[in-house]
Image (cartoon, rainbow over all chains, first blue to last red; front, side, top):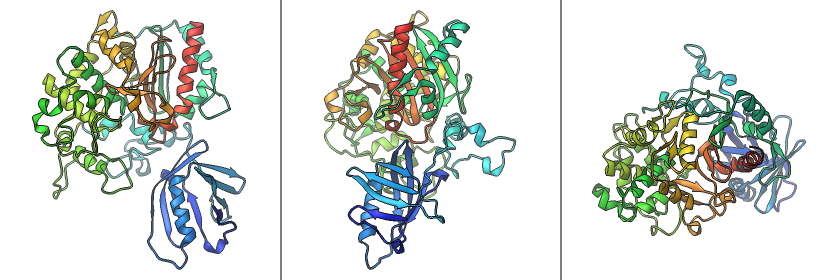
Length: 162
Length: 355
């Protein structure tokens, strides 16, 4: 849940502004007070970038917070997690502060490590035929997105003619 | 021809010593060991050749010693090397305009660019890779490049070369470096026109066979069979080590001179640093020429680089070649360089001091 945003301290939680980082395919979802938004994120150590942001297009009486928040998200540069608090920083420093709530794992920013995302550990394309959830195919699957990418880089010939 | 290795005892010893080398990543105050950096960077293969002997070789993830891995944009550096060889052999005039070599380019933005501008990516062509914009050029390029059957109602260009024919100009050529893959496709077409061979055939004839490659490489193609000159290559780790050795030793490998030393000299000299701009913060002060990245650092290092962490890193001062395959979750090397470039520097300095 969003608690502080730039020059708007102590945002009431009735606004229900939240962001959730999903581990699957580095997607993020959230609500900016009026509209639902979605996008993708990338992290490296404490660096965070948010891309491909889209949102629903409802009109609401007061969209000040929403506009400020959605304009800020693509400019996020890094994050910090202190216990249940997530702070997002832009080029002018601290911008948004969130507090996780029991119902939302708002501070979960996780990317699989090299060992966890090892294609053998993930079990991609193992067995014959591989189980449905272990298949990497083209064009109906995102074969060049992490973590599938880690298998596909050694198997391009199985996706594209050469 | 097999690569030359240090003795098994020395190999085991060096493996331990190199793994333990500590360095400080960029923008950090905490040291990291070489071995930690391999995991941090989702490394799939790492090969280090020092004084022409393999001193370090490890495989992870999907790769093994007889396996192959996508080279991504390191493909550009192979295309660029072929072009530079043709320039030095006077088979290709770097000052010629593209339209005088390939009349079919018609009124494309490339028509009035020089070969050198294409080689150094100082053309100014419209090509956006903003994935969030449904009208971005990358989508039309992807549709043109896809080898899969086109939808029945598709009316756009088919293949890399048809795509190039309709590229629009964005500004004046020759002013600034703009890293755009379509320059490599253009260069691939130029190289093919001048030699009458596909770049895959030429790579095989000029580099792969004479250098004694141990595996075949392969390259993805569009629906018309044109190889992807900007990123389609897949090859073995050791074979890219051989490419690195050729670059390190001025065109020589296994006692054979495959191309003139001037080819490497031209690349090592680098491109116009004034035009490089600040689009690549981890490569500040660097340049790009003949599709190779030149660091202009203390060791005069230069490299082939590809998204998700691929590199052939040549350090002439340390007499070292390093090849890395990786599958880092994020494409941009700007995220990977902070834990890579200082590590390469540390291992180069270690080898210089101890071997």
